[in-house]
Amino acid sequence: MQLRGVWKVRDPAWQAWHHRRKLQKGGVSVFIQSHLQFTTLNLYKYCVDQDTEGCALQLDSTFSNISIIVIYKSPAGNFNTFVTRLDKILQKLCAMKANLIICGDVNVNCLQESDKKSQLNALLNSYNCFSIVQFPTRTYKNSITAIDNIFIDTTKIDT
Image 1 (cartoon, rainbow, N blue to C red):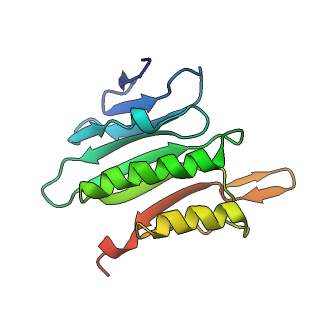
Image 2: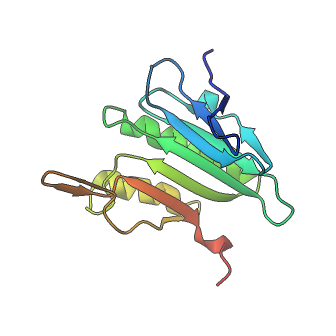
């Protein structure tokens, strides 16, 4: 098993946690300030390179139980595998009664209606998670997309 754990970064004020099974380069990482207390959450059994790559941590706080998930699906990845694995990850974290923050590059354009967008939204909405990014995250030549996103459980927000 080739799992990369906490990295030492050049600035001692930061730590990074990274996950990728076999492929070189790419993957997902979480960078967190070193003074924050956190616990890494093992998502290894849910991850398949390119289809569903993810890492997560739980902030150790007396105020709130917050789990941050960073997720990636390659454009070449299998969307059905991604949705199935993401569902299993969310089931695990919801069992911990965590407030969820999901960040990542899901390679589903949230600016255009599509079957993939509908399927992703249906899954996330079933966990009360909704997109907070309503603007383009990538502009390239003649393309404007929102494939990088942040989803949060809006029922946990005090208004």
